[in-house]
Image 1 (tube, rainbow, N blue to C red):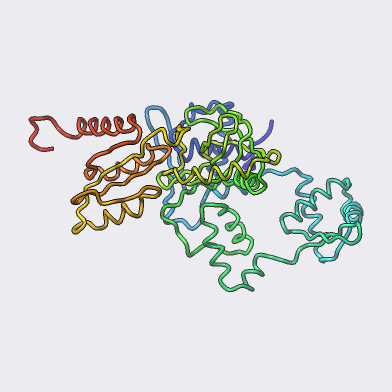
Image 2: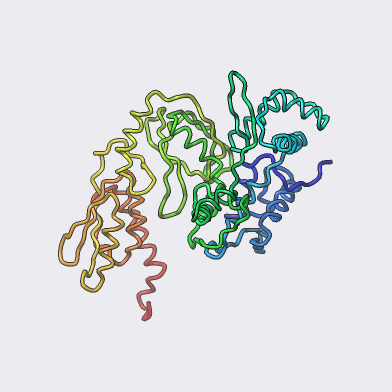
Amino acid sequence: MAGFSELIRNFNKTRDYVRDFFIYGCKIRSDFDRKSIRTYGDEKRRVESWLGDYMRYDDSVRGRSVSISVDSGHIPENPLYNAYRCKSFTDNDIRLHFFIIDILCDYKLRPLREIVDELNSQYGMLFDEQTVRNKLREYTDEGIVIAVKQGKTLYYSLSRDTAGDFMREFCGLDDAVKFFSETQNFGIVGNTILRYAGISNDLFFIKHNYIIHTLEDILLPDILSAITQKRWLAFTSVSGSSDTPNEKGQVVPMQILVSVQTGRRYLAAYIPAIRKLISFRLDHIRSVKIGGVCEEFDDFKAAYDHNISRCFGVSFGMRRNSDSVDPIRITFFVDEVNEPFILERLEREKRCGSLENSGDHLYTITADVFDPNEIMQWAKSFIGRIVRIEGGNENVRKRFYSDINKMYELYGGDDDEHIQ
């Protein structure tokens, strides 16, 4: 019977588990239906071994829920980085790693054949040339080994470059890497560099740091490569209400978007089958696969660049004809003399809309956007100042007034109540 191990083979499984149980913190043991209860126990122990100092346990009538409790403004390092350092490896992987480093530690150039022979003569290990070649190619891509072509033969040597040497050579580089280690995109790279150099972040603490984004970073290299190389992309995703994976057909990736309202990240892509632009949440994407070159990529990108200017947030809505709905107009009451900061906020946050003075202490934002729901979510932060809403989608307006009426019923008090 296989014993418990803190190492993992499938990062996607651990990523989903950490997100559903430990980040959202709303699931309990009985909600785990992917495999056996023992699998739940193994996954729980594994994550607790990485994040033991940040665990919180809440008991309810449904059972005990376990979640991560972190004040990002008081920690120097994202604790979820530990998930990337627990990938399992085979016995041959670890042997080959140390043997190759030991052979190349004198920094002399050696051809593949000589390295294979030394593995046999020095360590009594028989590896076929293709296995060693693949490992050397992997280390060359990562910068651990240098490959030099002489004639038709590749010669390999251990790289002399180390993170510590660069830190000592370039003044201020350590501070730059400290900052990079806690930024949202690929912070694990900066954190790993710091570890190799024996340095820890003691300068930068980010108050509103969405630490869960690091679990999505594993998808970004392939997505960004597909965008750069103008290729098709296929991916598997789940919806917010179901854990059943859905295979998405070929899409054309355009850009990674970040919602300033929720902090979530999205993949904006064009779907030729339905001729629409759609944004997909990155935390719902399980895996991605790069396809062939898209010959029409530049045409799709030009259309995307034109349409993104009509998005208030990250949604392209359901509109197919940009002239089918009137621009939405929201009028606010603003006392310019006593509350100039309100006017400044409207000017700063109007995004693709236009702001104009429409009367005494009245200012109107006009926006022709694909999804008026997004601008209404923002407008609700000005409750008490909204004078009227015109144009746009009728359903959106009705929903807004319906929400106001429901709020009044909840908090407005009874007619005979003196205190409201």
